[in-house]
Length: 397
Ligand SMILES: Cc1ncc(COP(=O)(O)O)c(C=O)c1O
Image 1 (cartoon, rainbow, N blue to C red):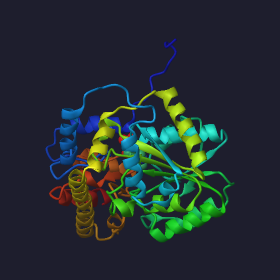
Image 2 (cartoon, rainbow, N blue to C red):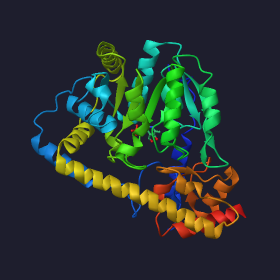
Image 3 (cartoon, rainbow, N blue to C red):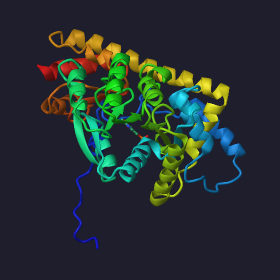
Image 4 (tube, rainbow, N blue to C red):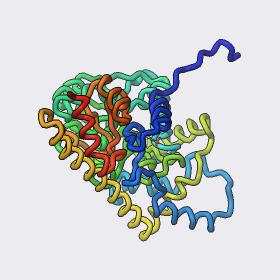
């Protein structure tokens, strides 16, 4: 059965992680892996999460299965976190939610649903998009196409080109949009641009598939959900995949959800029944712990406030690092404008250097990033930024 199988090459990010671990230099800097890090370079368990876990451990009396749709309390709390307490789509009972194994699981469930609903569906993703979008969606048998998005010349969005592309799509094409903190570019749509995309999506009868993996890490919990809340309010249908990995720091607990907005409550019920069946055919029931933690935090005023404060500190740290990085690069590389790093949002930006220069940063300066020069801003520390800026100026020559 297996003798003819080829060994696949390892994921490049794993190679990068291994090279970083093996590097004995005490000043090495890891900007490759996409997890939040604090000023000590750690990815700690949030205080609110620890407290919620303690309460759960004391209270929990059984480990029997949760339902295929997941923890109903978590699903409801996530609907309110994603859409806001008084969202009209919630009031109209047009939203159904299924607990998922992280944002990846949510994206895959949504892809499977799309294939059931429309086997020939095409999903259009941004150029570039997060690398995992491709296997997660195409693994469900879905065809992917790409719309223009990032403009390396400005560090912003090629908005006119994006609209022009979307304006040619046939009805019921699916457009995957990053809700905020675009990965890998950090280039987000402004609120005015979200409204323009909304008009176009409505006019051309497109289906938005929103991926929100960084709610609260850009401008704020409400601000980062602007496009999601707008689209769910104004459009008959939308898919929204959300992740609790980054904003709750729950990475390994695999916690997320898929919200689907439908045109009527009856259509929404049908969608949920299909999602539950899809989940049953893949893994049957989701894991409990991460979702129970999130439910506990969101249901308790004190824990919720503590979590929002911790999230705010993570966000502020990223904003400060972005500002400090630009300040130092301005001094060390006066001929080049890195101001886009301060305008971009979330954990990632493209430094905009060549593969050769990425290699030099790694080999000569012990600074690790993926070959496309994506940097995880949270991998920097205030004290390492001057060295980073010097190294960039040296490889730029
Ligand atoms: C754009 C995007 N979507 C979704 C995810 C989902 O992550 P997870 O499955 O770890 O929740 C990530 C994580 O890096 C991401 O960057």
